[in-house]
Image 1 (cartoon, rainbow, N blue to C red):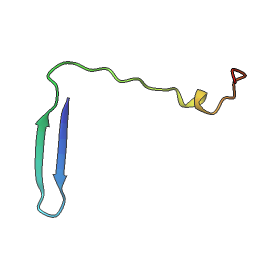
Image 2 (image 1 turned 90 degrees about the vertical axis):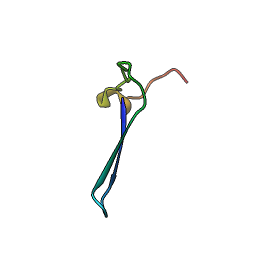
Image 3 (image 1 turned 45 degrees about the horizontal axis):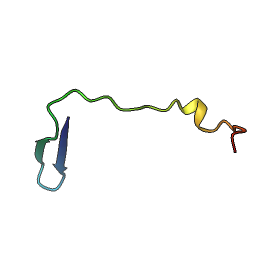
Length: 40
């Protein structure tokens, strides 16, 4: 995973490696975000 910083004024691009490992991120299905539940 990398962090990329782009300076639009100068056009400089800086890249910084945050992790060499493969990382997976949780994605929430947008169809379920607004569904009501009765758990509360």
